[in-house]
Every structure is written in structure tokens, then in C-alpha cells.
Length: 325
Image (cartoon, rainbow, N blue to C red; front, side, top):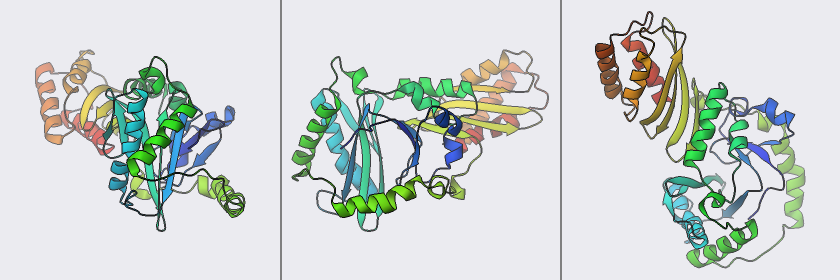
């Protein structure tokens, strides 16, 4: 268990570094950037988060199948929050939530026959920095993302009138880990051989340009931008070029549209009509049949003049948002 001694930004193993983080900003404020060996999304980390890193061979207490690993080990995180006074629960696949908000993010990977799970208990969260380090299409997207984070991600400082410090979190987590998993933990320092491997192999690799800028798999490259905020909640922006540009920015939960903004260089007469379409889309599912019906009803009821943008163009723009879920 640990807390970062200094802040840093981090990308997941499968991500494209330059597309995920605002590297110019990170450089300007002296924020180190690393790529972790586990999957998941880009994020900002600092001393306000207490991390657990569990490395083990398969045992009765520790399954190696990823979904079973999360289900089993996150009982400890849930119990830690509960003992601290927060009504937490497990949210498959890999989140812990409390009062409808995410309070712990977790990732996993395999290294040969060894499985690794990493996650956190969030004591305090710097929402502005979380949003600032990510690369986004524009500042309006960043503002929306920061608001969404405040709405859907919480921490002990927000949930409790007298939140514990990091050392108390570590004590409670360690006790719960031993009791729930039926194991005994013993404190130990890294061996001389482990330090040697770290200094001569692991650290140079993780700081190398080849590791940081490794090419993301083709299958992960999609047009537009999607940022996961919490379990099922994303902020997404997608462009569709018809006769005019249509830009859709949406906050989604699963395939439900929580909020949506449609902009671009198109003309709409009356100009307020597009707001009526946005209102009609809120609460709808990102399913092609539903989207077509909603857009059709809008055009029939409003009869807007939108040169270069027809109903099918609007549907295709919305389907691009769906493709980024």
C-alpha cells in the first residue's frame, strides 16, 4: 500500500499517449508522465489517493480470472469504506460505488503465471487537475468533463465530516484484507535483487520513449473522444461531416443519454429548434431505432430549415456517439 510522494499523470497500457494526455501542459507544470502495465484509462494521481497493489499466484483466496479477481478482492475495498463510515458496494466489473458515485477505480493484468490488481481508496480528489491533464477537443469539453467528475466521482473528504488520513486507511484496509481473505500479511522490504531489477530493468524501460509512446492497437483508434468518468458514465464528443459539420457532445450512462449538446457550422431556422431536439434526446437510448424515431418526430413537428443537414445526417452523427461507448 502506498501514496504517491509527488503527483503524476498516467496512461493505461493500451492507450495512445498523445491522444489521451495534454503533454504540453504536463511538461509546463513539471508533471511526470508514465505508462502502467495494466489497462484502463488515463488519469491523474497524487497523495490524496491510497493505492493497493496486489501481486500473487493463484490461490483459493486469490483467483486469477479477471472478473473473479475483481469480485473477490474488491470485497476488501468495499469493507474498508464501510468500516470508515461510507456505505460502499461493488459495481461490476471493477468499480466500488457509494451513494451513487464511484469511490474506487481498479485495474488488473497478468504477468506470466502471476496476476496483478491495482486500485485505490480516494481520500481527497483534485477534480480540476483530473480534468486538466487529459487531452480534450476544447475547453467546453473539459468543463463538461470536470462537472461530470464532480457529479459521479466522490472521495472520503466529501462523504465524511471527519475523513481519515492515509495511514488510517492503510490500517483499516490491511485488517479487512486479512480477515476477509483468511491470509496473514507480513511487512517486508524489497530484496537487494528486487531493487537491482527495478533500477536496471524496470525503471529504464518505464521511462523510455519507446515504452511511453508505444503505438496503441488499431482496434482502439476511433474518431472522436470518449472519457470514462465512472461506472458506465462517459463524456463523448463526435463529429459528423454532412453538407455542414455536426458536432455532438453527450454525457451518457450505459447507452442512455443523460445530457447532450449539438453544435456545428450548420444553420437552423428557427435557431431555437436544435434545443428542442436536444431536449427530446435526453433520457433516450443510443439505439438506432430509437434515435431514428426521435429525429423523425423532431423534423415532423418542428419542420426546421437546416440546409445541408437532413434527418439521416443527424442520425449518423448520433450513431458516431454510440460507436464510442
